[in-house]
Image (cartoon, rainbow over all chains, first blue to last red; front, side, top):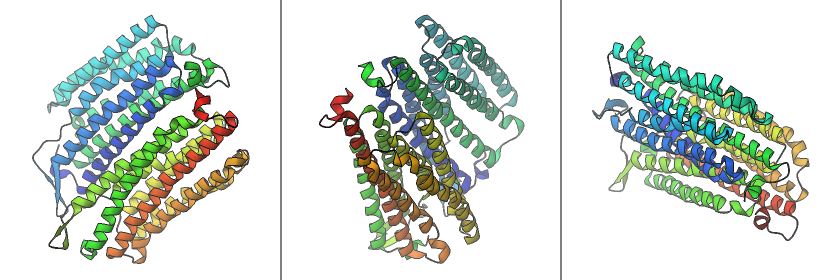
Length: 260
Length: 260
């Protein structure tokens, strides 16, 4: 990253985007945990895990914010690098934990048989972890050939996950109650579309996109993708859980009362 | 902002107003979450979200307070700028999250049908987000023409929201039980009146109001508007939820007991 290429305006935009994400992830976590009682006991693990994902992201965005703050200083209206490097690796550590959990949320809210939940949950969770691990050596390398190699390797589990979501899960989705089938489909598309952003951003420096604009686009872009993939996705999972709880309890009977 | 124009007295007034708001938002958050059990399950999401709004504001007022504290220093009874700029952008980041949530609170406590809740909630939430986003480029500009342009653009969704609240929701309000109709009307008016403050403050620098008095008026004014629009509004929402819970559970039966 070329720090002299970053303007004060770009620095502030990224700074405010990180602070915004801290607020979003904190609010989302509390929303999921405070509203656990609104769904029946079968759907509480999915809602609890939605809150875990945003809580883990809250922790990492706090670290990312502090690292960004420590890397630059504004003196007399001019941005200067302090010499302390901005630590982007927090993102990989976050994804290693949250990406498998996001797939497990989706599996849990579908409420498949125990054996299917176990087999699909482990397979998708492991594929996601392998994808993140394979991306990391490329991310920390400045050599384009090395970056392309690891990018290509990480794309194998990525494509496999997309295949599992659209082909492997299609029979299970057809068995979902009609009032949530649209939402489950939305959750699946949110996953694929928000995740597709990451490998695109990864190749920015390999195709010559560098400097202040590229750095700002990468940081703001990752931030928006994280908000969609974690908080917005979690709200969709919560809505599926509420609708299925209501349908299973029968009309007029509050979900929480029946769960007691 | 002209920092030399700010007196020690003005600086302290704003400082104390920010600290006061931290206390208000923290107390309001705990009030809403601790009292969730006083309303039936149908109204808990509205009360939970009232607490989320004040929790998000608590976070931002803490940041605003710290930024104000870092921007000035008092030495030998004289106020000096430290060179670290005061970050007013925290307000926009806050509003982007809380303003849509405030409208969703109002929709949720009215307890419309699921499809109406969804359609009105999304429409009002998106209009509110667009309004805040359109205000931001004007706020960060020092050029009056640019400020007027974005002010005018942001007023379009603002007027549309007022129209939705007074015309779009009037049929739904007539269907509310009689014992809360007055409170729902209060909530609607609180929204419009407290929100009207923001576009007025926005034009202060465009009509020549600058210096210490104007800066103090802007900061204290925004603070009062935030307390009314978030904490006071939340208490009204809570009261509506309590009355509707009591009415639906039958007289003499506490809502919390009946919800079990």
